[in-house]
Length: 202
Image 1 (cartoon, rainbow, N blue to C red):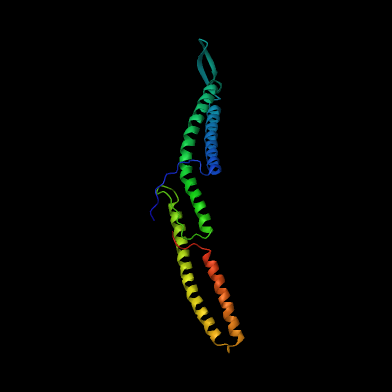
Image 2 (image 1 turned 120 degrees about the horizontal axis):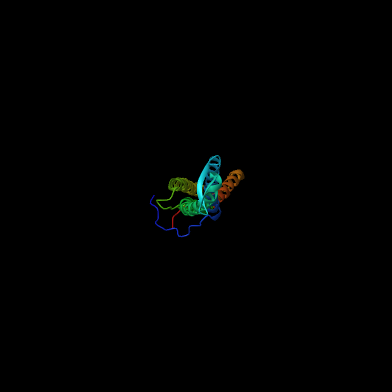
């Protein structure tokens, strides 16, 4: 199956899915930064550092000395990594959410009875094999229903011929005539059920 060429311009396709995805990813980044900072702070608590404070040499606890720099660098790192994460996750989630949205809408179209419908995705999308599988399933259903429709048409012609013969022979038992009329009614119901499905491509 060759994919139709189109460009998805809207990067927020499934907003809830993408927002949750981005927030969870950013929460992991923040959690990682906080854990790293806490570990570094705890490891440096038992050490001292010499530093110049107001032009005087001072001996201070390393943990207290690095804490402001640790918080500042942590916040800057979190901000930069979060921006990069949002961009990367937006792109990756778009490659998942876009095809999922398209398959969801396509499944609704197929579920409404349109078995001639084809799902088209870009060749770079992540779930093209799933779309191919759904297209193959739909095509098999379409062929099966076309065969049933053909057999139903043949059966209908035979029933109509028998009914015509019965009309010319009023001596036939009522049971046979009633059975033929019941068959004709069932044939009409079957045709109505088959006609619910769109089987031919436009």
